[in-house]
Amino acid sequence: MEQGFANRYWTSNDGLKLHFRDYPGGEGPDREGRPPVICLHGLTRNARDFAEVADRLAGKWRVIVPEMRGRGMSEYAADAATYNPLHYVQDLIALLEQEGIERFIAIGTSLGGLMTMLLAASDPDRIAAAVLNDIGPDVDGAGIERIREYVGQGRSYATWMHAARALQEVHGEAHPKFGIEQWLDMAKRSMVVQQNGRIGFDYDMKIAEPFAQDDGAAPPDLWPALQALDGRPVLFVRGERSDILTEATLEKMLARLPLASAVTIAGSGHAPLLTEPESVAAMDALFAKIT
Image 1 (cartoon, one colour):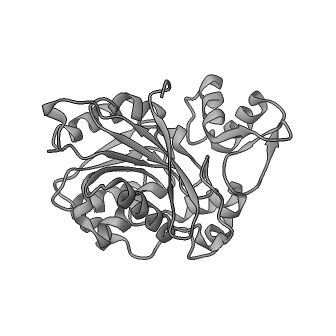
Image 2: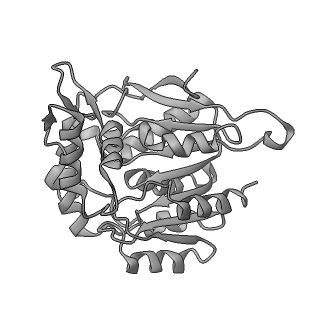
């Protein structure tokens, strides 16, 4: 475990071998009984997205970073129809059961936030606290259409620099302050060297099939699911330039959960990295409330 985490696996209800990173929580009387932190990635992403977040929390908290079916080191599904939020939640529940986790802190980016709300709707006692990163019960249609334009395209690149420039072309409006080093870092998080030596995205292109359907982007009416998080520490993170979570939706979320806090990351679109100073400070304040 030289890299700070162990690569571990669990099995979905339909027999897929799924991967997660397991960061140790350390020992000591002040850490006994602490719920683990589970970081849930976005639609086309993987465990590498949470490397800095997990490294910062590990030692104080056990951190688990699952890779959903069809991403990273997890197996791809034979049936593309299972690439949907309800199935991902079923996979997550199988992981919780394997690890004996009754209660956890959720950090969910985009799709991961949808999963958090869905689980809260069916079993709110599982969620000790939640960070919803640039996602809410209402998902802006402009952002959905933008994602549909690039997800599942299967493009590949000759070098990491070509890959970074391609990401900059697609996502530059969301992260206008990024320099080439940050785009290279994003490329290495979201892509891998393929068997033919070219660099391609680290997910099954078939995840685009359900997402392309009119009802495949997000489950309907998640406001009751958000309401299920009431009474526990909740943080909403929004990118100032987000085309997924609008300012109006965020205000409505805060009205529904008056004890929740929110932070808007200036100059960021969908989705903040959660490594920005504002994100770090807001998450530290949230974690200080958790018992």
